[in-house]
Amino acid sequence: MSTTKQAKYANISISYIYLFASLLSLFLSWLWLSYDQPINIDGILYLRVAKTFLHHGFNAAAHTYSWPFFSIMIAYISKLSHLSLLTSAHLLVSFFYVLIVIGFMNLVKTMGGNKQTIVIAALVVLFFPTLAHERAFIYRDFGYYAFALFALAALIQYDRYNKTTHALLWGIYISIATLFRIEGVIFFLFAPLLLLFNSRLSWIEKIVIYCKANIILLIAAIIFVYLRKFGNTTSHSLTLMQLLSNVASVFSSTQIKLHSFIQVIKHNFNTFIGQNAKLILFGGMFAIFFMAFLATLTAVLALLALIFWLKIKFNFAAKTRKHIYAFIVLNLIILTAFLLQTFFLIPRYMMFLGLIILTIIPFGIENILNRWDILVNKTWQNILLKTLFVLVALNLLISSAVHIGADKSYIIKSGKWLNAHTSTKDRFYINAPRIAFYSQRQNANPYIYGASFSYQNLEKINSAQYDFYVLQVNHHNVQAAKN
Image (cartoon, rainbow, N blue to C red; front, side, top):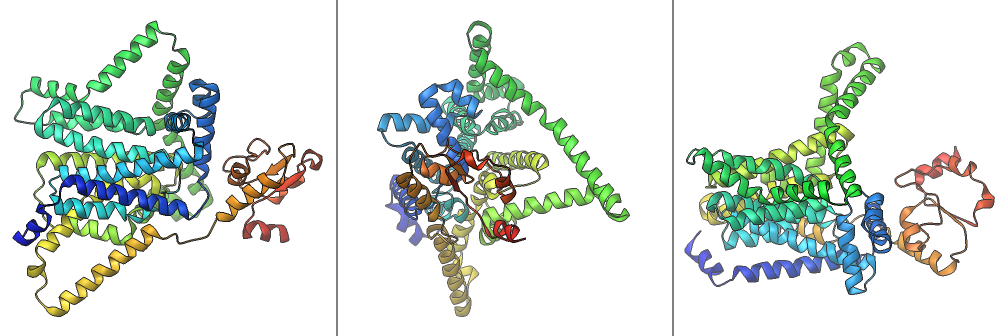
């Protein structure tokens, strides 16, 4: 970095940078909530589980949803603050967004970033469009992203300094991340294995370092075994054993699904396609993965990340690189396993992978800024690149701060109108979970979570059962009705 740029950031405390980024994150969350768009359907499920926990306890909540810890947090915030479950959920999600921003900046700092790099990192994560678009939604994933980022930074620091504090932080952070998504177990089990690959240490030293990294996991295993043997934890043990059994069955079910898809291709297409069924199947899956990845990063950030990873040389320490690459590989394995199971991916599932890959962008931008006079030695190049930079920055800013797309506030208005103008004694058939949620008539209808609506369903319903039909339809439903 040049002397002038060093002086520019020398008097700025890192704490102030974190504080400003946190306040800006809270402002962006408020901005997205002010657009008054309905929450996601998954959010309705989490709120229902939180309500179940408040009224019936943990077992009932776990029966409603097998991994209820996010909902339990919402429930406790609501109980302590006397706010509604919906408001409590939005507060929790906004807090997690602050942690994601700080976690991303902290990871960049751990990788070797200086104050200038950290400032750029703050701007990159704050104006990451795909992440910003989810601010008004309620997902458990946000807690997972935040604490997994902190966990990765702690693991790098532990490998670098061999301090027990960092080992404990790694265990605590990845444990909390796992409370939001079970995928955290994969990182818990396999990420520390790289600590064993240090030629400078004896095997005894390697084992000690590895065990220290897994101290939280070892304590949890001891407690579970003890409670399993001596405590009255039958229901919890059964839930955990069922979960482990489901994880173990993934490989066999995946093999069965792949075989059935290959057979379908062979029997329903011509000879050439049938003979290349495996190639076509996996080619299609790769296309799904690539499109989801591109949708996650956006074309601009994906191109920048690719250029910086491939073309610009950085002096990352080996102990930093190996853990970054390990987390990328483990993410790819998790996503591939999910893709093999479901044959679809959405950007939200790839967000953590995207955040890790984006950590290179602050270093790349800093590298360009520091070498600007060398890289750009002609006036027209200077003007062109600055114009391009401004256009890209405006694109990311607008995409991250402005709601672009269909206005769905009518869902909230419809639900609230129903709540105000009908009686709780009225009998409803509602095919839209979000309208049912905002009308507070969630128990008054037989809608199926995630089911698509068709007019043929109405023909099977006894009209005497309901006083009102509340239907959310689209142009496909209307066209089907005309036909």
